[in-house]
Image 1 (cartoon, rainbow, N blue to C red):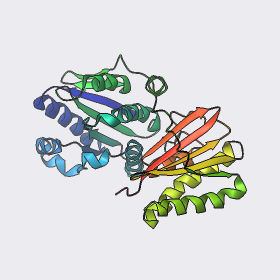
Image 2 (spheres, one colour; image 1 turned 45 degrees about the vertical axis):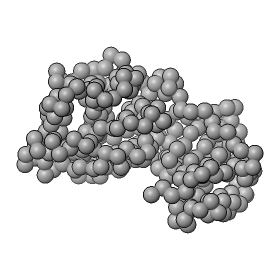
Image 3 (tube, one colour; image 1 turned 135 degrees about the horizontal axis):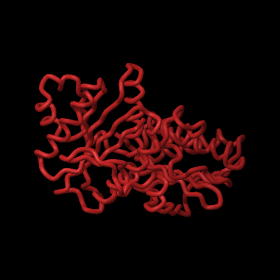
Image 4 (cartoon, rainbow, N blue to C red; image 1 turned 180 degrees about the horizontal axis):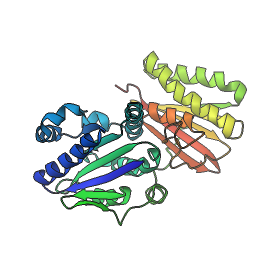
Amino acid sequence: MLGHSALVYSSPDEFLTCATDYVRQGLVAGDSVVLATAQAPGILTALGPLAERVEVVDEQSWHRIPAWTIGAYARRAERAARGGHRLRALVELRWENAAVTGDWERYESVLNSALAALSVDLCCAYDTRTVPADVLAAARHTHPSTRNAAGLQDSTAYMTTGDFLAANPHPDRLPVPAWAATIEFGAAEIPAVRKTALAWALDAGMVEDEAHEFLIAIYEIASNAVEHGGGRGVGRFWADGDLLFCEVRSALPIVDPLIAGYRPPGTAQERGRGLWLARQICERVTIHNNGGATVQLVRSVSSA
C-alpha cells in the first residue's frame, strides 16, 4: 500500500522536472496531493491549472517532530481514503540541525513500517549539493526506491526498518537526577500518579491545558506498565530548563520497542494505542528494554 521513494537531485531543473512529473501523475490518477517543500511555488507554476488541486503546507511546521509528522500523514491518508483517494506527498526536509539528524533518519525508516497499511505514496527530496553525504547514504538505506531524471529505480542499498534501527539506535537512556520526584505505583495508585504529575507540570510553569495533555501521555504509559508490564511501575519526574521529563519503569519488556507506538491504531496492530498517543503528545519518546522496560517522555513547558 505504501510507496516511499527518495528524489535525489543535483540541480533546480532536475528537481522541478522530477517533482512536477511525480505530482502530475498523482493528480491524473485522482490522488490527494500535498507539498511540503520550500520549492512548492515552482511546482505549482509548472502544473498550471492542475495546481488548484494541490495542498501546500509549511515544510518546517510539517517536519517539526518525527512522530507528529507520521500522525499527520495518517490523518490525511484516512481523510483521503474516505473520499476514495490515495494520499500522495512530495516533501523536503531541511538537514541543517545536526543534533536531530539521527532522529529524522530513523523517522524515514520508521515510515516504511508505520504507514505500511495505509494508501500513501511519499516522495522525499534530497539535494546532493547541500545535504550531507552521510544523510544521502542513509536515504538510500531508508527508501525502497529512488527517483531522478532517469526515472524510478529500486534501491539496492535499502534496509528493512528493523535492520536500519538496529544499526542506528536512538540515544541512550537519559540519566535521572537524584532529586527527581519518584512514585511507585500499581493499579490502585494510578490516581496518585496523575495527581503527582499534574502538580509537577504546573509547578514547572506549564499552562493547565498543556499540562493536562501531557498528563494523558503519562497516564497511558503508567497504565501500560500496570496492565502489560508486570502489575507495578516506578514513575520519576524532573525538569531541566524549558523541558519536562517523565520516566516510567516496569518489570516486563515492551514488544518491538524500536517501532512501538509509531503505527496508527487500527492499522496493523491490536495494541499500542497508549504509546501512539504518547508519541503524538510528547516531543520525544524513547523505549529501553533492560530486563524490564523504561519509557522516557520529554515535553517542552510550552509546545507552541
